[in-house]
Image (cartoon, rainbow, N blue to C red; front, side, top):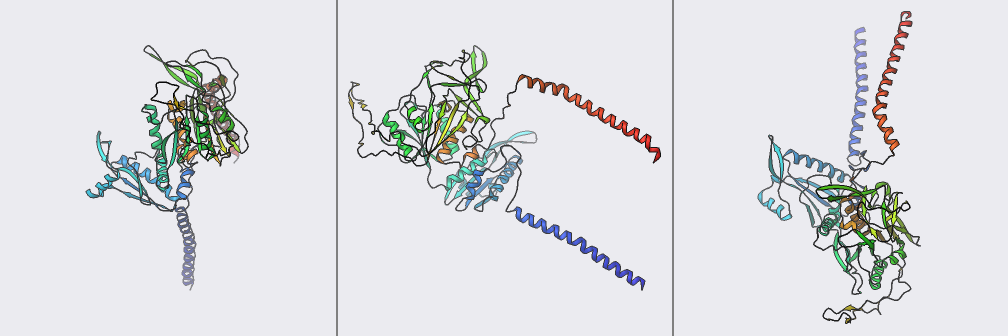
Length: 556
């Protein structure tokens, strides 16, 4: 009887313990299934980099969340050699994050090695073909032909990224291409001509470089054209943004009128105004008059009749003396760091550095209905110089008061026309090219009787920069700033956050000599002393413990 009771008790006990073990296991499995289900739709990532370089930008999220139809992303990538396979894995990681923020992305991966000749021929028609890369196999370099392309399709349109060798700029390329194929109409950016401005079509190295950057970074978003106002005709209605880039001659009143009316119709404008003109083969500068100062001051930005230097933050130039090359600090190439950019405006909020050569100061004025933002400023060691300028490196620098100067500014709002209470200017008569007499001119003034001056604008934007030299002295930072300006004026904030997603510079903050010496001696003397102090404290504590053990140990 006792044995039966004992067996029953054990059986009951094992059943109870079994339930106690099984129940927590089932709960844990249920939680894991639920977490896995939720994580497939919602996920959290922690990016500890200051600029969030490993996180898809808000601009990208906005673009892919607002898609109105399916966008197909097809990755045509080889899986071998290992180097290419690693790039493919990095691309998968990026596209998985894209997919997490949109239900309208269809992502496919195709290895062209598995395709037949006819299918590969179709890829060639799309612009997708094998590219040679150097790889190392068995301790020697060999050339491998691989596919490294991505195709983006939408509603019958298709764009191809023919070679993707890294993910460094992949987010911008992907998102801008998605914007391109899903945008109904491309925007037109017009460059003013006729006054020795920066000619976007000129066959110089600097101009071709800028045009390539516009074509590449805009990725087809913009139609680039030129605007000639010398005939007195209005700016073409297709132009969304007008760029006035470093005019070297005076604009006529009629040309200024057409620019004013373009802005009144809601057009956006970027003014890059040089304060000086250089004498040929020298760095002797003289003041430059463009005729635009009164127009821009009416809108809300007063251009200083000066050239700005910065004694603390400036670039350097290379000097050649015989066979020797010297690096010379040059205060007239002011260097703006991240602390002196506007953090409120997306043009500059993520910029790290920008050099502005031979720039003038700008003063933002209070205008009703207009918001002014100082995009870039010098340090408190800025200086203003006026008159005839000797800008040779190493030449004596005049002593002037030190202060902060604004060198780039943006205006937003509704503007009043500069010509609201004025008669419409007529076009100046043009010289007859077939006449030997320069005074023999023909009147080309277009009819103005049917023109009515628009006195108030719709909401629009204007950017003014105190130099046009950023386009002739182009570098990655100035190119990024210029393209950000074009994007902000033409497309809004859509692509700026993506282009500015990478770090360009992390300069060390300047410190005084006292701080430098303090850091030096802390590192050379302070750290060894700290080690000695920690060791001494540890020795004294161990000695005290030993005494306590010796005193009280025998009593325990």
